[in-house]
Image (tube, rainbow, N blue to C red; front, side):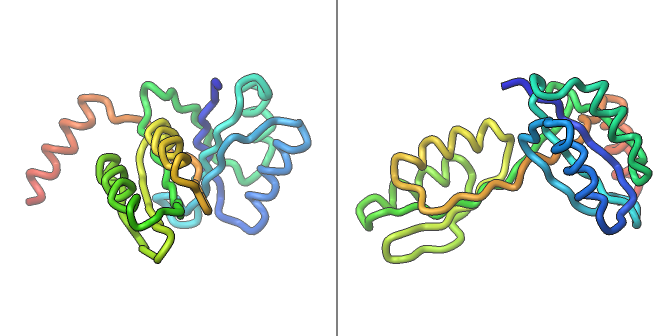
Length: 174
């Protein structure tokens, strides 16, 4: 599936998220993933919205979003030029004989075991959404009891010059 990844900077006010989600619902745009949290500047939040390309023409979405008074900035993030992450929590039914296999699988994917019960294990894993898809597919063979994913968060990758400046700045501060 092809997606638009939008990073929307908004004023952090009551009801903003409801207005943004309502805009998508009224226009019958399918939101694939939605994540929101405070941004780097106090008083602002960043909403990362992943939208199905087929259901939503990008130009129309941005025009509609900018009509909302709280929207400050909208950036479309190119998946090839952005850093994306997501968090997955899963409780998997495992017998004592299978537990080692699931723990090894979590280790291979750099996940963490959060809780161990008599018949189940709870695992957390963060990473690129494709990595989480692969992990979830492998866990399905054991019997997923519960699963929750946060939705994508994303920021633009730093260009080489910006990375070099950040390293140089860090060196001066230390």
